[in-house]
Length: 239
Ligand SMILES: Nc1ncnc2c1ncn2[C@@H]1O[C@H](COP(=O)(O)OP(=O)(O)OP(=O)(O)O)[C@@H](O)[C@H]1O
Image 1 (tube, rainbow, N blue to C red):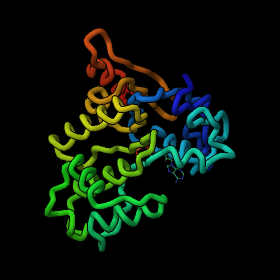
Image 2 (image 1 turned 135 degrees about the vertical axis):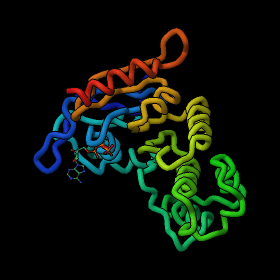
Image 3 (image 1 turned 60 degrees about the horizontal axis):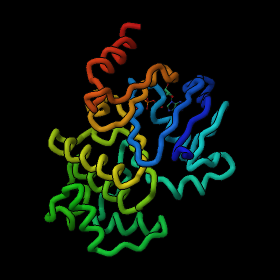
């Protein structure tokens, strides 16, 4: 079957520096793939390439089997992207933010659907009509996740989605990601959290210095072995 997302020998230069070097991986429909790596490994760059914001200097990226180059809009309509720092308006409340950004995406969504998404991310009811400048980082993140859900796209790209969330919210978030994948959505998340990646992903790719240096999947126990991945990740620090 055609992968939902695919990088083929992807290389990318930013400001004269090679930040991605011959990276290849594919994510099937309904799969959760975590791209794991340390600071500066090239994780966010990879996501931006799938969105067509950065153009490969070698190789290509494909969304739904179509090369992103030359067809950026077609790729973007299939993707909801959750950036690391959610860009929402502080002077608007959660409903107003959702309404505004969904409107921009050409979607009309009523209050009931918004409440269902905000319930799903467990944003407290009392907060929903408060201006977002009074929100904690975790509450802003939850609202941004609700927005990504309401976009109702087949593919989700998540950049460090659990940073700023407390441990209970992280567990809830991982459960939600798994449920979305079971329902057929494809999830590519980037993270430097070894434990979180192993908990939520079907497969983990290890990115180091712009190269994909390892790939891990669940063993007979049904889980990716955190110790193995951690050891591979830590090698980088020693290298
Ligand atoms: N706007 C930019 N212009 C030029 N180089 C950049 C830019 N943003 C990032 N880079 C460089 O590209 C490389 C990869 O950065 P990227 O943000 O993709 O890494 P990352 O794995 O997401 O890291 P982090 O975990 O710190 O967010 C780094 O060397 C970084 O310095």
